[in-house]
Length: 356
Ligand code: IPM
Ligand code: MN
Image (cartoon, rainbow, N blue to C red; front, side, top):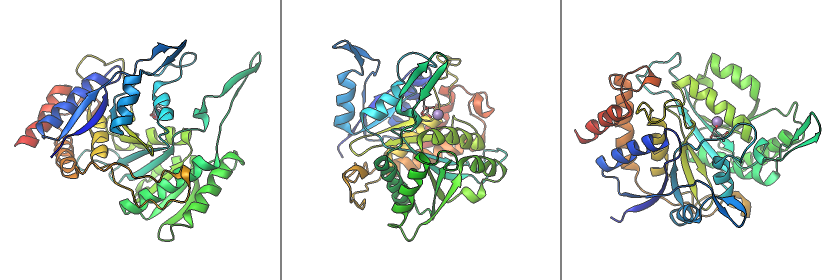
């Protein structure tokens, strides 16, 4: 009955408030987790600004972290710390499930898809320069290894979650070489999974189809390069009630960091109005963090070593039920969902159900 130690990065803006909410719910539910709280605010080390060693070591040791949003500068300035963390721990797959919440009314009631986003390269490689005045080049970097690795993860995810199809989302009609190679990697990996259907679809077409009728995209996994996954996941969040509801996990071979898809929401920070659901649901992904020791492994880069298994699925189910039914009832929900409840009131409504 030992406790699992998990790194907690509360983050910026609404981060500390929603982290408090998760902690309160976990302690009410008696989840055997001990939070190791760390700051990732960069410090100066040898003339460079870096994430503090204490944070890095904590994630390395625990191999699992829950992270609030970190403010990301627009335009000039430092590289987003969110990206630094993904890169530091080589979190190659960003898993973003998006499913309608039964009873919570939106124009759609049958969304149930999972996006898997390549998480280390593409337009996020951060290689940019001004060639001459008024001309800037940003490099979209695509490698075979990262494409193959995320593709294989997507198929394993489909297999272990009972989803019957993997769709690679791309713009290989324009990005003929980079997206073309991404597709080749997906196609090659698909041959290892004869039980799972595989197809390819253009990103713009998927956007159009999904907002017209999301049903055909249910029961499948969509895998795509980094930037496409960033954009499409926000769009899908819009189908189910917004970014306050969508969780995510950044999965790596040696560590994984679970975080909400949303940002730090500085406009409402500190006011007790934030919706903690996305962070809470991300934490539940963490509790369900599956052991994929059986990952068919034929390459060092495909992330085949054992992942940690928390074995806390029962807790995840209970907390999820309490959360989703609170939202469905609609009496004590936050402003983003059309309610009037504060973060605390909403948190307490969930706790009341857990302890009833
Ligand atoms: C996300 C966020 C990040 C991204 C930002 C904050 C760097 O939008 O996780 O989707 O662009 O990946
Ligand atoms: Mn995003």
